[in-house]
Structures are given as structure tokens and as C-alpha cells.
Image 1 (spheres, rainbow, N blue to C red):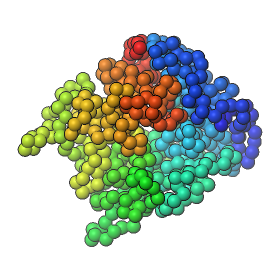
Image 2: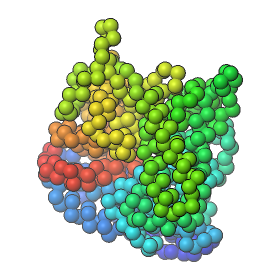
Image 3: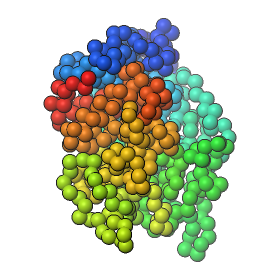
Length: 544
């Protein structure tokens, strides 16, 4: 049931949002052809809930929607932008209040969409869709308050269950915990309480997301004082401790199996829902300088635990968070620990994460020639690229997944610039099948078809392309033709519903997963805002 902000009542010392039973369930509402339809060939419905049923309102976002949508020539593209950018504000702020023991501590429970739980990764990314609107503002009704509330609630979660990825509502909200039937058989160490935790898959990018949203808030507001209050520094110490613990290899120098800080098993028919070796995961070598991740950002288990995009993302935000610590002072030990960790991870990525792969002859972009690194090995010509996962023993996974962090998205979180030669070669491999239509080189999870050709992943399976990957492709491209091609595909991939799905069958637009996926919706809106700055002429094109 969607929430309606009509009453603010004090309960347990916190502000709680009243529920309006007349508002539609957005999971159902998002699958209806709500009028008016756009005037383009796709005839996309208007999918914003009624104003009284929207969960949060920001005048700055409403003004941007009104202004920019009128500048977008294509009626379908304009409608998709209007539907998607405000989706988190419209539908996913399940509760915004204050802590029961401190009425000055804001809390924001932000659901992922059609699942009533708060993912660390999703909640950070959902708010980052509005980063261009973030300004210093102490008021409870501001975007800055939503950011503070998410950071504070994530800090609480990370102090109690730092290995977990998604969580139940805070007790102050009065909202009941959601049932996760998939987790009934889970055996997890460290153990957790399902009253507070929805699922406990350890994912390195969940820890990185706390660093990401913290640094984003500080960079846009300069509000260093906020980080001295409440539990932020303690949560940061928990993040760093957890990350360093997960640098534990499988064997010690004498070959004895070491005790892993985290193990996970689940009774399931899906191999990607559990870990091998009775919950330990695949073996990891010593002294790589990298952090293990049991699961990927898709919530699928890692084939090899040294997940390179996760390490890239984590290390990219260590420096910006150190700047916060230097501003608030008094934490020199933590600064030193993080700087040492930063050096270790960067060295590990470049040593273990760069591998040789069969050379892709044709590039999918207009980038300058980056084939000079190719070398001849017998009859096989190879070149160096980033691997998706490695184990430190010499094995690697050459692929990419649609979910962020991915190799394709590395420039978005600042690990390297989009014109970096090594990135361009890696990008060429990730997207190779979009030119070649299959073959023995490239990304085995690139899905091809007449409707949507894009990176997918094992979460939805072969044949299911993710629009999120097309959005990331646009955000990391300077090629107008490539960008316009991706926009055409995305417009055709909504199943006529005018929202961004999790995945879509490349050959059949009626087959898709998740009707309400707030992160992907917000990312599309963020991408349009980016094009309005970088390439406004594209928004004046027709995609009919």
C-alpha cells in the first residue's frame, strides 16, 4: 500500500507517516495503463501516483521535471523521464522520522520498490539519483534530511549486522517486518535476527555504498558537523573492520584452512543463491591485497570471491571519506588505516585484476585505437583487460553483470576516467557481442535480440537483458550514435508501461521482471539530467 503524507504523529519519540488506505498499491498501479498516454508510437502511460499519495515532495525536482520535460522533443522519452526521475520520492520513502531515543536524529526507511525492505546499495543509489538537487538544508522536509536519515539508518544497520545486505523497518516506524520466505533455511555466520535483517548476503558493494552516500552528502553540503553526531564514526569503523576481516584467505602459509569471518548456506535449487564448500565460498589466495565478496550486487554468489568491481568501488570512496575524517579531526588512527587499505586495494586490483583475454578486433565505440597493448601468443592474439572476478591463484572470470558496481560502470564511481585505455579495452570486451552477435570472444552475459541488446546476468538468466546496463552504457559514452541507439532500445523495452524493468527478454517485450524497481527508474532520470548537461542536442531528437 502506498503511503500518503497527511499526518505527522509523535510515537515512541519519532515522527511517523500516516497511511492513507485510499491510495493504490503501486505494484499493481505500475502495471496499469494510467492516462493520459504519451503522443508517441509507444503510447506510454502516466505512472506517477496521485499527488496526495506520493511519499515525499521536493519542489526542486518538480520544477526540473516541468522544465526539462518540455525541452525533450520526443513525447515518449519525455513521458519516461517524468515517470522515472521522481519514482523513489513518489513511491519508496516508506517512512521518514526520528530515532526513538533522540528526536534530533533523522531516520529514513527507503524500500527498493516491490520488495518491502531496505538494501544498503539500493537506498544509497536511489538517493544519488537526486544528487544534483542536494543543497545544505537543516529542515526535516528537505532532500538533505532524507540523506541524513538514510546515512543514520545505514549506520545503525552496519553496527548490528555489518555482513548483511538488506534490512527490516526500524522499530520506531511501527511498520511490521517483511517475511523473506527464501531465507527460511539460511545458515549464516555471524547469526542475525530476522526482526531486523531481511537478508544477510555479504556483498562488498553494500559496505562501499555507505562510504558512497556519506561522501556524496559531504561533498554537496559541506556539513562536517553531521558526521560528529550519532553513530557515523562507529559505523565507519565497523565497515573498515569488516572489510579487513574479509581479506582472510582460505589457507594459511602451512596449508591449514582458516576460519572465515562469514559463511552462508541456503537450501535452494539455484546455484547462485548459496556458497560452495559448505558456505566458505571458492578458495582465495593469500596476500592479494583485495577484499573478498561472497555475493555480487545482483545478490548472486560470486564464482570467485575477489570481485574486482566491488574492490574498485570500495577503494574509490576511501579517499573522499578520509576527507570527512580530516575535517572533523580526532581520528588519525582510522585515517591511517584507511589510507593503508586504499594503497593495498589499488595495488591488488592492478596486479591481480588485469588479465589477458582474446583480442576483440572491432570496437563498439568511436574511441581512439587502444589495440597497441595486444600481443601475439601462438595463433591467439590477446590484450589486457580487467577481469570481473579472480581468485589470486591465476583463475579469472571474464564477463560483466548489469548491476552496479560493474566493470562497465567503473568511471561512474571514479575509479578511472572513461577514456582510460585499459577501461576502453575492457568495455570493448563487455559489449563485443553487440557488434558481433555472438562468438567466442566478449561477455557471455551480453544478451542479443531485436528488442533490447544489453548486458544481463545470471540473476534473471540468459536472454534477459537489463535496461540498467543500457543506461550505464549511455552514462559512460561520448558517442552520439551509441547513446541514441540505447535510448531507442530502452523506450521499446518498458512493455508499454512507461517504467524501467529489472530485466527484459531480448526477443519478447511482454516478458520482464519487476514492475517497480525504483533504483533503475531513478538511474534513468539521472541519465537524462546528465544528457541535458553533456549532450542537450540529443534530447531534441525524435525516437519515433
